[in-house]
Amino acid sequence: MDAKTQKYDRQLRLWGAGGQEALESAHILLVNATAVGCEILKNLVLPGIGQYTVVDQGIVTLNDIGSNFFLDQDSLGKSRAQEACALLGELNEDVRGHWITKDILSLLDESPNYLSSFTLVIATAVTRQAAEKIAGLCWQASQDGGKQISFVWVKTVGLIGAARIAVPEHLVVETHPDNEKLADLRIDSPFPELATYAKSFDFNTQDSMEFGHIPYVAILLKYMEEWKAEHDGKIPQNYAEKNKLKANIRSGMRTVDDENFDEAFDSALRACNPTVVPNDIKELFQDPKCEALTTQSSHFWIIARAVRDFVEDKEKSAGYLPLSGTIPDMKAQTDSYVTLQNIYKTKAKQDVQEVLNRVRSLLEKLGLTSDTIAVQEVEIFCKFSAFLKVIRYRSIADEYQNPKTKEIASWLEDDFSSPAFPQYVLLRASDSFYDDHGRYPGEGENWQEDVDQLHANVNTLLQSWGIAEDAVSKDLTHEICRYGIGSIHNIASFMGGVVSQEIIKLITHQYIPMNNTFIFDGARSVSNVFAV
Image 1 (cartoon, helix red, strand yellow):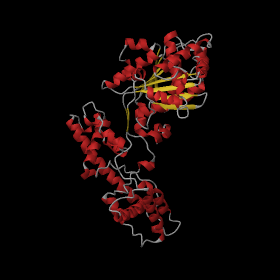
Image 2 (cartoon, rainbow, N blue to C red):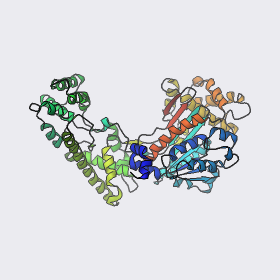
Image 3 (cartoon, rainbow, N blue to C red):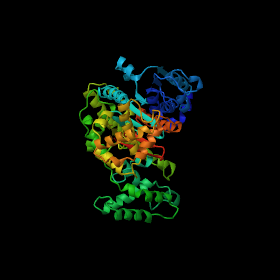
Image 4 (cartoon, helix red, strand yellow):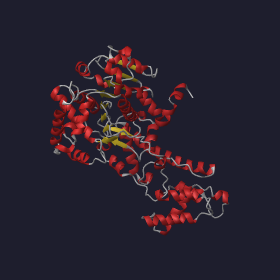
């Protein structure tokens, strides 16, 4: 094991070499070296992002030192960007850090294309207008056919934390379903090699040792085929029939110690689910981006189209998605298990080759070289083809201009399922307060004087959504005014962990990130995700 693999061994088990390569190729921009901003970067520097840049025109104050572990007493009066960058850089010598002592809006005015060199932008302690501008530039760059630049806006106010992701389209192949879901056993519709394997076991003549080690897949195939022979080729259709199949399996046991039959019994209900293309994958196949490929189409959509074409060729696919090639552990003799494993793997490789042929044909039609998409990329896509995920986020501009009033009303009414949503309203009202006064509520000398004005902003916002004024308690308005703009380190640390986890999902395109706003109410220890 080389030094690098040893260093990152634990995380490689989570997202593999491909995910690590994506991290090491990433360049992250942090706008403002706040406590939460530094906590997020800490959790990205440690696993080895390629590089980061901190843009912050601020000077370190005593308040900064009190809430930010990446600033110390020696930092007082110095550039906040430079000091944070230096201390974060000590965490991982493989990561390159940069800093710029400028206001982000001034920087963008000087260089409108400045954001194009970044993979992802994190904005903290910025006004709504600044967030909208930065998010809009990231959004536009992503839509112009260039690389996707994800935008993440993070706020912490006292015991409240919020994070918002905005990117036009996020594509996930390696969603990492659990192994039980990933295993595509085809018990209801075995391919010829699998059916032949199941018939190789003579349940009547094997001795106790051999009988007790028949793989449960073979047991399920035997009893399913017997069922289908007696029911016009149909698998069990209802609960009673499924229980009858389970009873048939149980009756085949010789002794109570036949664990393989227990495994078959436990897996019988799942085996009765017909093998089909999931509805969300069917919808993906009908997506305009899958229909109309161009030279600008991402690899995801080109392979998706190839898989769709494969599924439609029933002579090759029987109308099914490519086989994943994964099987679960089970009680079996080693040779029987390895043989079964190889049968599934061989079929999976055959399906991959069929899809690969179609990928290369599509690339040729687009005028692209056949090696534009690597074989390994097609293999991974086929393995997870039943679990693909496309997330299309709303832009922040759309959130403000076209609010989801029906959903907002529902979230405010349902205090049980969405207890954190009032804090979203308060944060939005605080932005309106800033627009009116040039400061945030509680930032002045007497925070009590801001309560009525902020609550007026809350009610104005609620009215614009067609919601009654009493939907948000004035007690909550009182709380956020008392917080002022104070940043509490444990909230910053918690939010840093949550947001960095989502950022890693965005960078690696593995696992499914939240859509689209996370709200944490630390006073009540509740959190929710809302697609606002």
